[in-house]
Amino acid sequence: MGKGQNMLVIGPDGTGGRGLALGAVANQVRIARERANANGKEGVRCVYALTSSDPSERAEVLRTLEEAGVKDDVVIVSALGSTSEDDGNSDELRSAEAVAVAASACAVAESFTLSSGLDSFVVVDDIDRHKALWDWTTRLLIDVYGEEAVVEADRQGGASSEMRGYYSGLIQRAGKYNARNAGGSVTLVMLASVPGAKEGRGDGQGGEEGVLTAEDFEGASQKVQDRIAVLVNRNVPLTPTNLRKIGIPVPSKSESESARTLALQHADDLISMSDGQIWLDADLLARGDRMPPLDPQRSITRVGIGADTESRADAPAVRGLTGGLR
Image: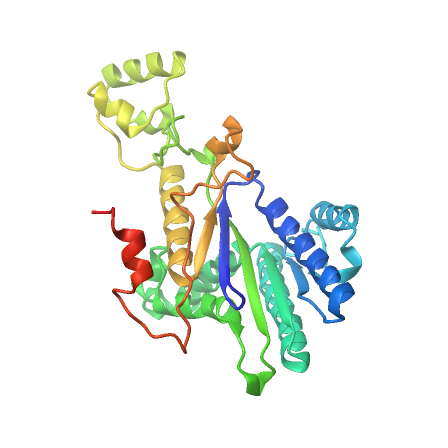
């Protein structure tokens, strides 16, 4: 990851995204200290944005940074942490606060960069509530002005150009500044979650299929329901692949599967807007194959060639790397 880039850290809850981000922050602080001791120059300034309003999560982040010995060198921008449910719009208010927290953290980083030419490193933990706020405003527009007030993609949960612009307001805060703007950089890491096994992920073999339940077959014939009961009793996952193998018709998407599909589609939309992503996999974590459980097939970084480097599609380095590929 280059200075001035943005990166997504994506994975189901519990796969270590926060730990990975906190480790990166601690490492940057240590490097900055070493640089200051060696030549007196200031290193990277770190800003951590915690969008969760859960006090226990804030305490966890503070404890981790303190145990690493870097808490005093990290600017922490956090939500207030209120858990009151008195307001009927409490969830929407927390989502709006989360968006404000992320923007404020970027503003703090930009102040370091623009005023002193320093490199800043921002972690936004996490951006899930950005989508919640967008969905709420979409519903509000429909309630007040009707369905024609929003584009079809927003009504169906997709990524319209307006929604991409909304996210770009955060993602494009990352950048490398020119000399006229002090020459520093803002590097941005954003944590995002995707549905995991508890939400119906996988067939137990690292797949991406949703797992159906017996309730999804309530409208099927009695014969089909009996066969489904046998599979459930034998703990056979009700994935589309397994059902097709034994000739059971796959029902139309259940509500949970539809929600999962939209969540994965949203993750793809975020990926298309970012410079790269680190994908954390629950199956790799369960097997203990790799820590952090990074899936190399889904993780990618896009590093630009730079403004003063000749752009060549047939560059010798590229030819050397791709010579054995077809």
